Each structure stands twice: as structure tokens, then as C-alpha cells.
Length: 87
Image (cartoon, rainbow, N blue to C red; front, top):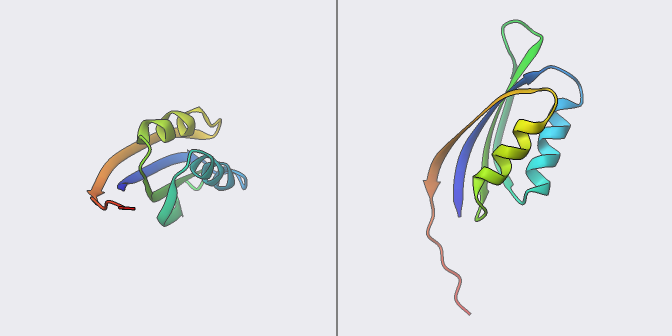
């Protein structure tokens, strides 16, 4: 399963984090780690997520970018785990 580091810069609203998390869940990604902090101007937030999924990360990127409060989305591949399940 591929892991990716997702960095989201967004306008600070109480519902912004909830929207980001909902998109991550609906696109079939699992959150492995999460950190959120207020930016220096206190009107924006930075959300750092480590997500995992066998699905292409481009699906997540395109949907996060469409959110109204999101200013920027950066995604980096973190690790590759090559587990195979055999029946």
C-alpha cells in the first residue's frame, strides 16, 4: 500500500478540517498521521496528513483542490510497502 504526505493550506473556518477529512474518507484513503496548525497570519491553517491507499493519489489531489477554502495542496510519495495477500 502506498503512503503519501499531503500538505493542505487553507483558510481557517471551523468546518474546513471536517471537509478535508470527509474527502479523504470518501476517496478511500486511510489516515496514518495528522497534524494541523494555524499559520502565522492566524487566518489560514496548514494540515499535514499521511495517508495510505492502493488507489491513485491523484483522485485525492483533485478532490481536495476543489474545496472552497483550500488554497494549495502538495502531495509527496512517502513509502512503498509491497505486501501481497495470498488466498
